[in-house]
Image (cartoon, rainbow, N blue to C red; front, side):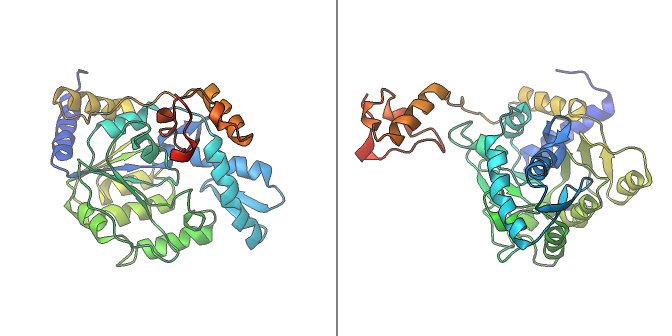
Length: 326
């Protein structure tokens, strides 16, 4: 176990106690995963921009939002964004560690489903619930209660799998803030858990963004006196940092290695870590063979056991009538 200075050791021990008692909320921001030194969502949005210069009049880099040529251009964007996310290939150990530490409630500001996918049966097999905020129609749909036995993963900024929930321009962002900051914006079970929290751990946030500060008010406004620790942030010394430090009691602790890794190691020594199953190894050559055989209506010629095929999420689903021979 890493040797920490007394103050940081106390923080780690308190966070672990809060996690054990389901009193610590983990909040994940856009900077948690980076590609080419950019946040994941910025990487995706810039890929969309590169392929749609005629449909996008302007791209606001600071907030990673668009100004579209017209409504049709905006309606077409989610389809392309979904494809970009689907074709991304990257690995991140942080998702595995997040799932191993038994947080009961994880709130993400990202629209992707990578964490929920990692928790799925095809990967680490963590019993969980996944929900997301909708700013159009059914924003406050109730959610299951969050527990460490069955954590709730909640996307506050929509989900890539539902077009209408994505935040693409300032109009969408204002809608989210208007509804979310209202009295009935968040589901009751979620608000209840936020009020019960003793501590908040922010991972991968850029608090220089004005709307990040509003969301901080939304999520922790009723718990201003409770400790909040921010890791992996790009916030420099500034008036905004001083404001967050004094108004919301946010303590900026530097990169992940300062607290998150020691927290993981401490939970390990305390036997707090959640048991994960080994992810299923996928044979890409076999998948390609199956795609070809299915396309030619020759699935019966496959030599891949059908018992395995059922576990390949999003690739092949075989029913009893089309089982491949063993």
